[in-house]
Length: 462
Image (cartoon, rainbow, N blue to C red; front, side, top):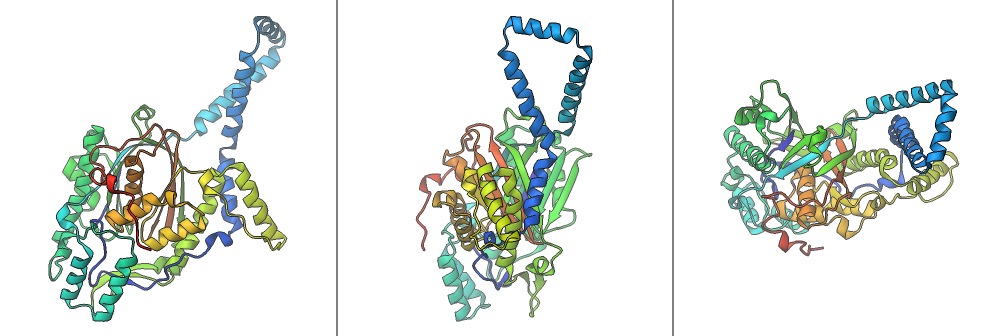
């Protein structure tokens, strides 16, 4: 079981929260591709080469055998009866191949269900309320306030996003107690709904993973969940920091018996971590400013670093998911450019041929815009990302679950559809997950879109 939680989805951050110094555009990462990451993707394919070879071979043998008539089968039996060595060799090959296949085959991971936290309505804040609040704090001069107005107007946010309870006061009242209470509301809200929808007993959970960006109390957030739901004493619990905002609880299983009720099967996971690079490490950095206010500083290099991490990630993912035709075109232009200095325009693979739905980290309108442009996606492919940003604000990496819930609520998730989730995190990280729908997926009860999906999509300001 994995649970992600932090603060409530926020429309914007008041004084002292975030320092922003960044370019709004991602680099054109597909114009420069490092060959070693392509090789890494092909390495993943070759790792399972024997499995890929054995499965079609067995299928061909079965098909050929099914087409034989009784006389041919009798002749084959007589031939084998007098060729004992051949029989032994073939049998040994089949036993060996089957054993290798069974032993090397990774256990499938299923997404049984998930739940996204939906904050109460009293935490919603409209633009004019936010601006009035910012003005009354006395922390911003008129030029700063005007900058905030322009950002809000172009942000892609709607009038129903949220800020935490402590931020509704004047002055704001952030505290350890308020942060702990907020975390409990987010985590327990998502988990209560998940347990209710799946009828899973908390004591059946074997692994607990909690992601949270900034709030890491003692006892840990994972310990809070263990205590709240009285999880088993030998549970494997992991408490991760530096990631997440918003809240989503996800129930995973590697039991084959859970396939029948699961929504999705995990197909691929590709992780990219750029933490070894100093600029990447510090591009999202929690620190105090000159007057002692603690916040998160975003480097002006953030978009370039995100683009580099994304380039690495999708270059590795490409060989795993793209059709052979796209791979050959991409690889041919890459080799011509790298080794023959040919002045050819890099071929941009068509990821629309690999995926039916896209869940893009809704960290801001600029991120969605640039990914739509660089990956040559259609407006329909980024609709879920834009609507999640509009309705719930910047929920950071948890936004990919709100987006998946949007697609389900629209009735668009059909059996066999493939979904690409891609999200970013401090450090700097870029991770991709590819899921395949095991059935025509309908939204679970208490979906975050349950009472408003009829209003979407909405027309956004340019």
